[in-house]
Length: 367
Image 1 (cartoon, rainbow, N blue to C red):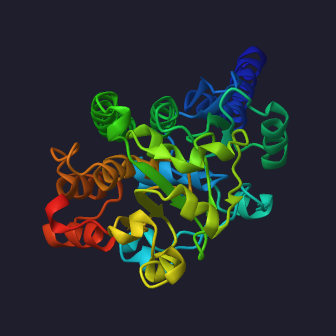
Image 2: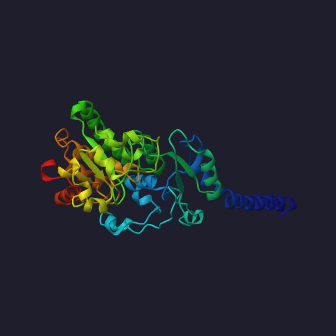
């Protein structure tokens, strides 16, 4: 072999080595980039996320609830501990999610616990029209390479569709998100039509009782009592309007007696268990006429707390408890079975659904 041939062979060997090195050191980045996509979140931030998302966590319960509804197999952790009662309506495969806390109410989350759950991306809720860019950017800095996606909150049941559909896109659950949005729109359309036909004389007054003594409430300006107005009820606490607040307002039993509501709705089982035997409430029309109702509780409350997609099934329920005659065409048993099957991932028999509704205060003739 002459000298020229040896040089050529040496060059070829070097090129082969360089090619292998290039493959070893550059291919992962190339694969990573090809397996990613850029999206624009609801704060108009450009964020790179995996092309296929397998695990997601959210920093607050309303966002976690949506993920659970549309893509439970991709939910990596929850912000709360299921209660034993709630677990009766949670399939076993979803009963033991890690609890990572979050940033909501008075709660502070742990960045370390979120990171330890190894999600592909993290959902951060932002106020509609008032998104906190600084907070989202702080989250992104603390979470490092895990993408943080800003999504408008779901506090307004008439506007939450945009956020649900967007979440469906980013987690690859478009069909489920569309189905959830369609279910919501079906009953929104119905209550819009029916409530518009109610005369002022036909409208019923409603008190939303919070707390174990029933003496906290929310006016219409709060998102917590929005279903009352939506279905055509008159919130008796409207005179207490204090702006759009998330805090309940303390009232006295004398004030409730003065309001004398036609209907009382509560989310507190303890209050509900004693309201019919408490002499302080005995002369109020809602109590005298047996029109006090307890929001179904599991796996999420139907009427409030959290304010989110869990309230979607609360729309037909609230319509039935306030105006059973006007909304007599709503098949609330069928709606309950459909919602639990498609979005809570558990099958209810006719009797199962009926028990939930009867326990809430509805009677057989109003189902």
